[in-house]
Length: 595
Image (cartoon, rainbow, N blue to C red; front, side, top):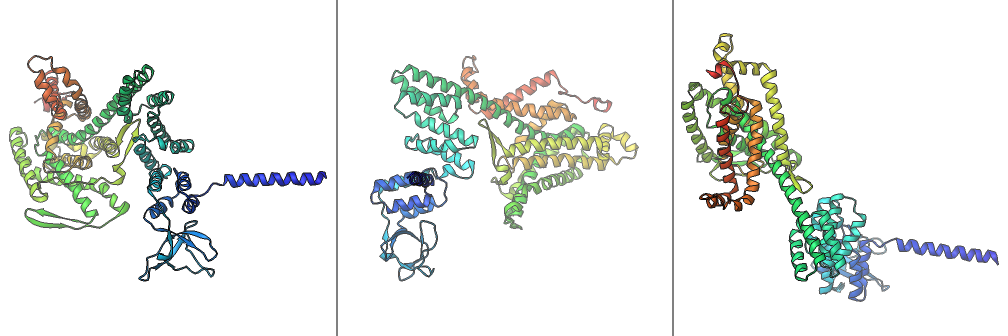
């Protein structure tokens, strides 16, 4: 008796465990779709489809799309078994085709394992109506919640979250329990809080406001303003106070983001000015040549990058001086093509350096120690070069596509750090150290410094000063070409590209101290940073200028174009600074310079 009872207890336990294991073995997405297609009523079908929300199986989207486009059918076997199938092959002229089972995606076969050829007209299509199509759309909208790439998940969550769809809350909460990526987790919390603002329960709305305050979500600003207006109209002081606190936290965070974003943009602009001004620090600071064609060296470097990109790709035909000049292409793809910018950097340096050497040999060498004549001559050369670039490449701007490794960005506490600008900053630091090593640790640097400080004594010691002058001018022009390569990754390339930076580059050299590399570095970052700060904050300062008698309105109108007004203020500040320190931050002192 006891043994029989024991056996029954053991059997009951086994059945219980078996039932539990079956319950734990959740249906696969394919099985859920099969259950939905075989369900007798629409309510059961919608319930099965609802279980698909947030799942990551790649078969979900094509199968639901096939259902919506009447490509799913029910095949009934001779035994009366219904099998949902997907027409997988092209229909023949007789209207027959092969099919695959929805359960596993394998071909539908007969007893011998041969693919069955079905007459499509004899199959019963899986029906659908408007409510089922809405249920399918809801599943497809949430399909990217479980995507492999975090960026794809964040994009899907943000897009759906901005709709404040309360029906998506269960899927968001289910995903939040298993999400491991911090950025995606934050996006889910934000989407849930935005949807909860539509909840009629005050407790849920208060929790949502507190969550948005903790997240300091920039995207929630408009939603919070709308909610605040509704709470004030409803005369709910608790929710209105919570909405104000959330808005204050978001505004404080936005100010921080703007500050650090402006600082980063200032560093990147300063880096470009630094590379361009280093060339002037050599040609103007050391050689005392006022080269107004320095901006065209920047354009030469940018156009060289454009040509290298075309050569790595499918080639290019340019209308060179009225003739069609074909540029051959290597037709590279993938990583080989993406390496074009790495190859373009030395090419841009060499192209601008060769143009600079040609300019020095043909014009500049006759105008040493004649600054006014060199200014006028190089200004004329700049006009000729601009027109030459127009005849070669056309008057319209051309675009240089950024390689994939420079196209993305880092998002750090909502501050966007573009990879191309990070690269410019890093490479500018490398160039500065490289120039320091060249000028102080190489024989060429020794000859350059000797020829610039006292060319007569250097010539008496056997230094070939004309050759050193040529190489020095080429070095300065090559650095301008590198600046052009950097600029091609930030904006479009045109014949007048360098004109927007030539004045800034001269200001950098003069403020830093003519001939001082260290002063050039400090003034480049200072001018670049101040320029970006003024462009960022002038629109906020302008309304407060109305009280200034006579010029308040003029300043406010001018401040509407923050970029122009910022440059005007920077120029005015430099003029005042030079009244105080005419020789710049770090003046170079030697007997030859003082003469």
